[in-house]
Image (cartoon, helix red, strand yellow):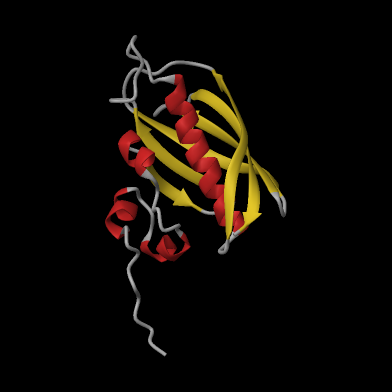
Length: 152
């Protein structure tokens, strides 16, 4: 039996997105997905208890120069879905079934930090609250996402 580590086929993408090497085996064959890369989302903490990532405002704005509301939701869905997948474990997949967002304040520049924390971790459903904050720690938006866990 060999202890040799086989790198994930998308190791460079995973590293660029902040996914630690020790978590690569848990990732799907699709890596983090193309939207995560396009939005500039980078994970800073990955666990079942807390999934955290940053996203730049630059290149993710709406016509008035503020961070697009949909960008908030992309970050929230990314964090909630990854957190649900970590809870579900290998051999299972998750699909989003509901998400909502409340936008509290705008942001025109800088880096947004999103944090997903579990509200419910069940056998077939998970629900996470995802809070986006500006660099000063002010709440920008609050999302709630529910994922269904499926056997492959």
